[in-house]
Length: 240
Ligand SMILES: [Zn+2]
Image (cartoon, rainbow, N blue to C red):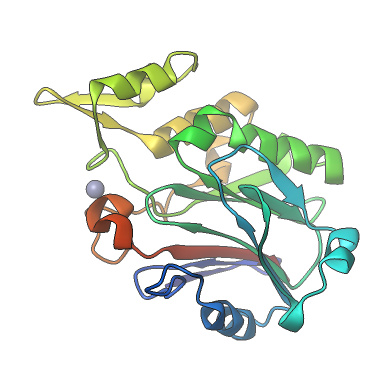
C-alpha cells in the first residue's frame, strides 16, 4: 500500500493486501469501511464497473439521493469514472490489470478517478473524465495533474494478433504495440499517456512513479496471473 500525500489531496494505491472481494465473489464491505476510517473520510463512493466510458459527478445531490449506512455508496450505479469537488469524500476504483488513473485540478480543487482497461481507454474514458471535470468545475487541461497506478504493463501484457482490430480506429494504437520474439504486447499506460498528451496535458504533470506491473510484480492482484479467483486492489483519491 502506498499513500501519496499532498497538502490538498491524498491518494491510496492498494495492492495484494487489499481484501475487496470475498471468496463467494461478493464485495467485502468491511474492507471499505476500514479504508474509510483509516483514510479519515466522511464517505466513500465506488461504482459498479462495466468497462464502459461513462461516469458520475459525486455532488451534493448525488449524496442526498444515495444516503446509505456509514456513508458508503458502494456499487450502486454503473460506470467507470467518478469526479467530485467535495472534501474528505473518497472516490475509488477497483482493478486487477486495468489501469487506475487519478486526476487532480489544482486551481478548482477538484478530483477524478477512472478505471481504464483497454476497452475503456479505446472508448475514450480518459477524455470523458476530463471533459466532465471541465463541464462540472471549469477545469483547464493545463491545471490537471494525473497519476497512473499499477496495471498490466508491456513487459507482460501479451496479446493475440486479433486484438489489434480493437485498435484499428485509434490514433495511437500502433504506438502502443510492441513486437518481441514474434509475440505481441500491449502498452496500456503508454496508450493512456499518448492520449493525455494529445489532450494537452503537460508531460511533467503525468506521474508514472506508481505505475508498477501487476503481472510481474508479486505485490499486486492480477487477473491474468491469478485467473478468475483474482482479487482486486483499490485506488482511492480524496480532497483534504
Ligand atoms: Zn510485467
